[in-house]
Image (cartoon, rainbow, N blue to C red; front, top):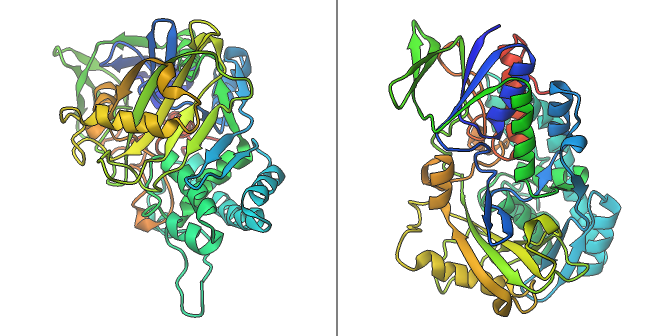
Length: 474
């Protein structure tokens, strides 16, 4: 039975800790903050509650596997899990409105034909077929297995090449896929909106990023009752049930090495904690492609109207938005969960608005009045989706990448996106084995990247490596 020190209590760290403790190891987690979950956080005030990180769960099979492998209680018995239907509604600048059903290929095709005319759904379906090829090629090396020593094959984009014109080159980015293969600004904006939602710029993200909407539309979008924070609560409780020891307010300042091997961690107060193995779940320098999140939490008077969609995208520019006045309006994601646990009573509603933005440093989100002025604009855009929004606001809370950095420790408040193939490896994350023996890397900054599902997979990969396996999340 090994002594294992885990640095950080984000979702990847929790997933690894639960699996390792179930395997009989003595696991202790050291977290600089006073709580667990990392970016999967919650804000509460006056009876209103909001997720300040992700609002929906994709690929729930990752957490089903975690709960099956670590105890008797399944995921569905540990949290209230439900499919979101429609998966999303979309409002385009010229006034087109449409909704996409959850995990229904035929339903999506029909909805897009109705919104954009006959043939639109077929073109979208053709792109999703090519995205399925990406999924089939990259699922194991990019998601289920630890990162191979030779990452060269993953540097090549597996999105099937389609030349446009006799001498034209294949589409290299998501924006080019939208223009050349979807051939309709509304469909292109839909594709870009998915990629923006995962924290990448469609103008630079490789064509392989089409796998992101493919995964959503194939495996569905899910909501956790009480908000996504309830999932973090359940994983934490699973850890404690398996005997994981937690130390909050305990910042690790150093991984102690001896003869090239990790032998423990040193805390900010000077305490040396000896360990046979160390798992680092704390963030590292983000990739240059990683973007941030700007969030406005709204406490509203008045009930949530019946039939309101859980998620609505109000499409504006298909690029990350830096908040400058005079620029095209941003694309805003509006989350309106029908959950009585998130509001004081049925005469009120909690709404979350999110925009993908550059991290702190690229933009100075601390400049006087800058964030508040951008929040005004975000609320104005969201008013298209929420009737009478301005008059309904009781109060609002604004979160910028600066707040994300404070919460998670990620420099600049960037939110790591999932690993993607292509772009010469520019969207790959650090491998799960560190250079020092006995040191492993987990969480959004490590392979296979950011997002709830990917963090859970990184925990499974690391636990398997420590157990002597090849490093697989299967």
